[in-house]
Length: 250
Image (tube, rainbow, N blue to C red; front, top):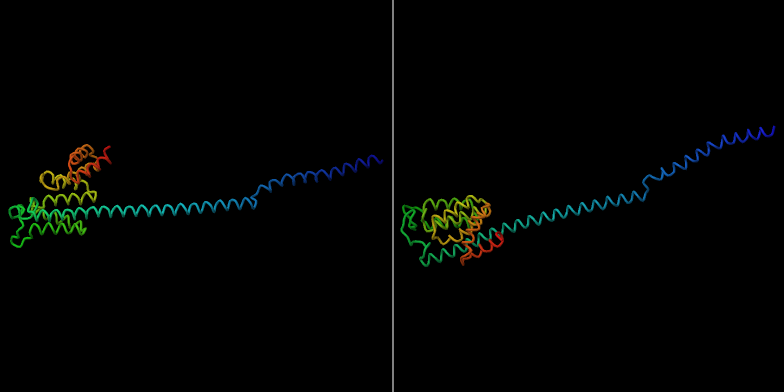
């Protein structure tokens, strides 16, 4: 009688304990899953990383803005250098013109016949004289009134196509268009000067500038030949031609 009772008690106990043990095992197994969620330390690290990335992005944006400012500043400096070069040319041309006029040499005023197309400097019937027309165009260019200067130089050439300042007018028109990167027009005016005024004092300068025009147009063979012809001389244009050849045709 006692043995069956003990057996019954053991069976009942095992029936109760087994589910408890199983439940405890489930609890222990579930604890690692709960631990896999983001801890406070991991959240802090993520926040720090996002902060670092934000400040890096801000730094890059500031560097881009700084570089953009530097590019704009350099562009302005290049424009000022171009304008300074034009001013220097104008000043030199004016000085040479005045000296030539005083000496009465080629290119001076009043050394040829009078009348339209002959280089005269007289005023007929209220017409503006050759010198006045050229000086007016020249002053417009000096004052950087480029569009008006183009019109004035063309007006001068219509009135005095073979005048004392015709070669100069061709040269300055070519120079204006070259500075404005209108290469076709620049080529036209420099070539006209060389063909129509072979003895003009601007010839060597025009050859050098035409060589540069050819090079920028991709006509390297023509450019190099012309520049080497200029470089063989002793003028300022020859020095510039040698420098240009060294920088672009080595």
